[in-house]
Amino acid sequence: MENQTVTAKKRIFSGIQPTGNLTLGNYIGALRNFKLLEDEYDCLYSIVDLHALTVRQNPAELRKACLRTMAIFLASGLDPEKNIIYFQSQVAAHAELAWILDCFTYMGELSRMTQFKDKSAKHADNINCGLFAYPVLMAADILLYMTDLVPIGADQKQHLEITRDIAERFNALYGDVFVMPEAYIPKVGARVMSLQEPTRKMSKSDPEETYIAILDKPDVIRRKLRRAVTDSENRVLFDPENRPGVSNLMSIMGALTGRGMDDISAEYDGRGYGAFKDAVADCVISVLEPIQNEYDRISADKAYLESVMVSGRERASAIAYRTMLKVRKKVGLAALKL
Figure (cartoon, rainbow, N blue to C red):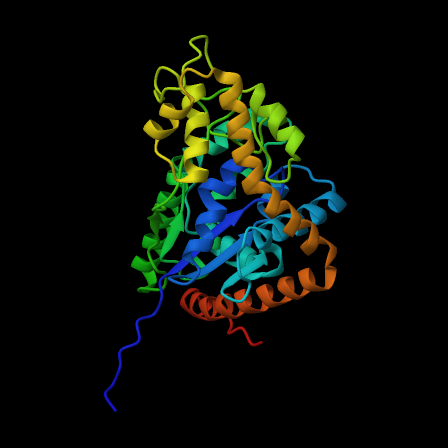
């Protein structure tokens, strides 16, 4: 029998905070793309509850939010057998590696992080050390799993850069311990903007009227879209620079249907914004309703969610353990025995 070369799959890691409501932007930009990756890549999706602690949380609500996020992942079609879906806090190596990497990260690097400046302005009464060191925990999340690729948006580029800087510094001292992660840019995707400020990205941390949540009911989706900012010209034409509002709605319809902007314009231009907004609402509802129905089914099955949680924790921990064996040995800590 001839020897066959088995090529290891590249590993993808992505983390998402459980706080706030996952939005249509999260679905279009991330969740539906995750489903497309599960056969080609070795994927880990972490619900990063430790990151959420930089802001004061209601403990019971945070636990519910973690389960809700996991259920949405599953309802969006992610196969828990093909992907590792787990809670960050249940793999203690995240915090351990973050502390070790803190000792290889400089204050000046962290002080230049724009997200720290932005969040400090939003939470001026709670500028804590966790907020400052947040990028190091993020680096630990990525490096812990020997990640090859990280799906990121433009606003996260700086975090990946500091992760690579930390890994490079550690590797220069101790040899090739960490894989150098690269950015992963999805083949299919669209940047979904705020419904009220269409020059800004749709964000789950913004006021509720600015985004469509994955779990929003049809009447709520229709109301939000009818109130979406457009302009006075009443023309369905794609021009993101000069007419960002209607262009955003066209992008949403295009992302969910696969239709081109010229095709959408040809059908709806001249019919008025009211008719077009209702058509976009119909499109969004038809995509989100099946996900919501599956979410309701999964959320009611507590035993199933528990099994996914336990399996994810065990599989993620096994990979993390191998990494920490190497890291602990390199820095001089006693061997870790399971």
